[in-house]
Length: 116
Image (tube, rainbow, N blue to C red; front, top):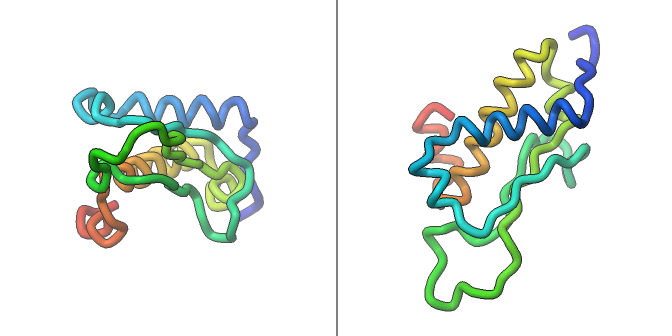
């Protein structure tokens, strides 16, 4: 690679929003108490995204009055592995789908089985 592609924070946030718009409506309406944010750098190297919260499959009657689940999409590591804006679009899409799957209680192992 020749270096990091330059995609502004604003443009990167637009790409994340566009990726969210591709989530099928029947799934999007099931997403509950979750926020998606862009963060420049991950808490540990190698992460492109991170889901923190209580998956829908684990929520019971006790689940109320809690802070929203959080999906973070990491800008800098994504840009570091991409050479073109098209690469960024694809990587953001994959990362958003991956983290939303965790919100639905789908494990990394199952995602890999499904080709994600």
